[in-house]
Image (tube, rainbow over all chains, first blue to last red; front, side):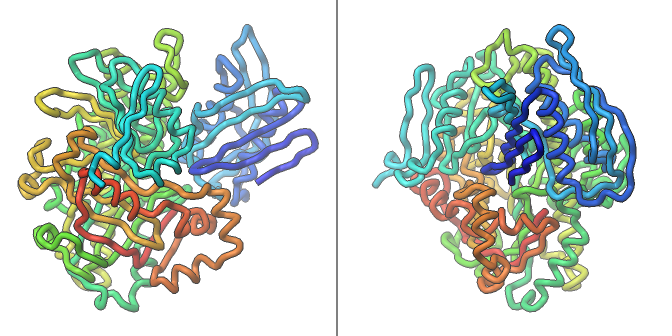
Length: 139
Length: 457
């Protein structure tokens, strides 16, 4: 699967799992792309709920793992799935803080069960034309 | 060829691995899986060589199909990556007293009833409403809680293990995820399969187990669901904080000494998840028996033949030495005279099942004494032959449902993509895996089992 947004490119591949690649001009846009990909898995989006989530991590790649794992937890326990997300990303002395204002689906259904974001092959790096995030998700 | 032709040793810079494979399987192993094997063999205080099963493939940290043992007297370590996210994921095999002729024409009804009795797929919640109090008891007493609540078949008790888990080592998030998933199958490659005994290879062993040609059997593959995944995530994150101290070769291989606070904490949480998984399989097989009772008027012929974990770390004694054995995608395989076995299996060994894909066959095997060489382990399945993505593309050119129907397999899944991703030939041929296992003297075939009806997530 490949999603092409205006400034973000998302590619999904995988053997037993999902190997997700997000490319974008900036770090914040990478996370925008990650949330966009997550929202693309939603099936039932009738009931909505607004919520705020805060994440902190010591690196941008770990931040990505935390976000995916939190979304998985929220779905397993509360059947909530993010639809539209506004994000703010800060770097305070190499502690990365992401604040997300989420418009989420309640009693959501999703197209595919995600089980956990792994550290396998995890990377967040700067490339010539922007940034790239690679993350492998167990399904 | 003798058994040595199926075992090869790979020497790495720091460690070495013993690989159980013929030339064809060995050449199919990904370089990344061999690199992961090398990483595992470099872990501190590991017993060398590390063992690799014929279904070896790339995993997270540890490859899948890997067995790593640590001598309890040599400062053993424990790594969540050596167990996997789905703690105590395993396969259960039961026989019925029905034959193919008894279920002919009723396959669709059985599937529909099972699909309704056993929630499967993304977001499908348990029909059991369990309190946190009960959940904590499940984490500490596993299948005993299930029998106490009469949600399982008490005659299975002797065949099932209760692990020494403590709920205090399990996070609130893990409890929350587990509270809604007991008695559910899950998604991915998990399945509930109605099979027939297609061929008997060892009549004496089959007679002992009460199996005969055309008998209907049931195979269930599932584990500790979101609870196990959350425990793995939580403790992996904890152990990664010590990466600067221990410097694991791969983040997913983070570890802690077993006797440290983190090592002991994870071991206890892992055992708690193992109890949850064991309870989960017991409840699902009880629900399956009830479906058979509803349709056929009886379920007394339902009996458990085996329930084998393939994602666990366990303390076991081999040749008077105690080891902490990590099995990641490798089945526990106990021949007679190995570990303490249920009364029925003391002179037989604990049967092992090697599942194949839903279009072909699985094998029931008897572990042999050579299993000592692999720290009492056997392959746990066939491993993918093609990626999910490739399977999805290929399925567009084929009518998989029709192909399955033509080969006599009924199928029902929650997610329409599952059929494509899990289609026949997406996995390697289980026959090849079992053939190496047999030729290497690890186990011998008892019976070949053909799928008749399959439900998946």
